[in-house]
Amino acid sequence: MLLALNDAAVPAVNRLGMREFEGIVGLGCWVRVAEGDAGVVGFLLCIPSGAGYGSENYRWFRERYDDFLYLDRVVVGAGMRGRGVGGRLYAEMHAFAATRWPRVVLEVNRLPPNPGSDRFHRRLGYEAVGERVYDDGASAVTMYERRLSRT
Image 1 (cartoon, rainbow, N blue to C red):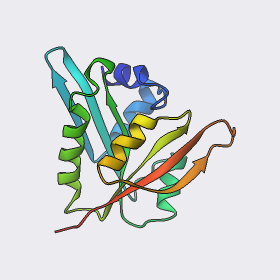
Image 2: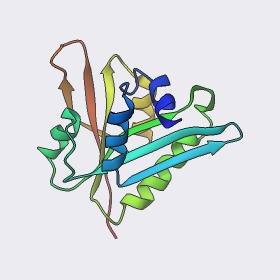
Image 3: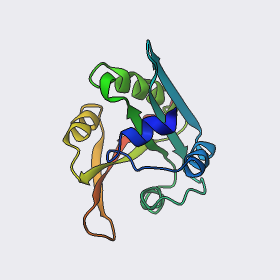
Image 4: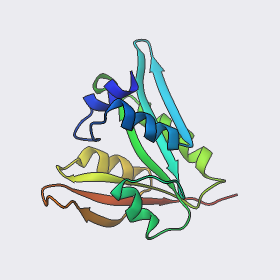
């Protein structure tokens, strides 16, 4: 179910095979599923710094920061967007991360553009800290960070 939800959100997230998806979930330290009347309506998956994750975006952050929580993917079903599902998932994730990591990091597509996600993340206090252009030159992402105060 989560993989189908993920693949329905392409190009906001990348399409994955079952084996690759299971591998990412296995690296995750925090996975939350949002449910509604129709069943699963969204999910959020985070990977800690120091994991053996092969993602180029993850490596970009690892080269710059020692300690972080990487938000690998968040997906909310098309019919549930704009209803607070993503905001609730992020609020839970920020509360979880606040005493464990100094920052949450993630990327948002710039090519193809995802202006709604950019607005959402800036509204939640994320700041752009860089950009990464993919080898094909046709894809790029903006790298974001939200600093947390560990207590």
